Image (cartoon, rainbow, N blue to C red; front, side, top):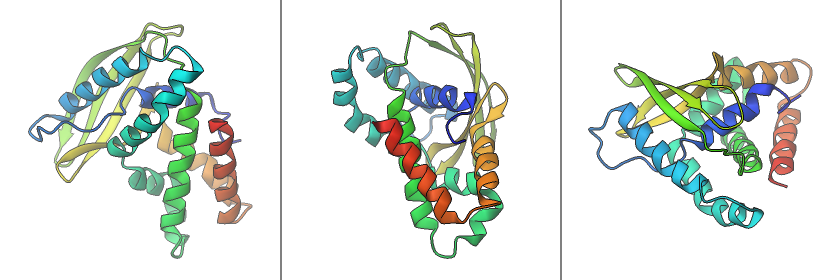
Length: 201
């Protein structure tokens, strides 16, 4: 069930385009920070031509991913109402969720096919923001990607990505809820670990 949804791969490719440490200029808007991130990441993606290039890039890209995304917030929102039932296992869930995303992300390295990003509207409301983009080119049809960010320690961090009107967080929440309706948390953690390890391999 996990990973079969067509939005997962598209979402992960979209995530690939925004993994880079936040700029130092804290006065920059969410769009400016995101655009700087995407520009630099696309430079990295353009260098990937072989399995050896992928292996060489994994370590740095892993650090980049952790620097840009608020995985704790993404994990909390993805679990929804079940978050309140973790009973001290919040850290374990966040860690496993992060490894699942990381493993899935590593599994799509090399999927970049010359896509370009066009920036649209930016909306900011206090400590929350949304930046609209379109991904053009490559081998697929144009894709609408909306990044949802919030301000953490002066840095705009992504906590959700909406691809063609489908939220990754909402998508995960639906899948996780289906599992937890008939299985304990340990079963969900097991599935996440298996999917993460399978994608890495």
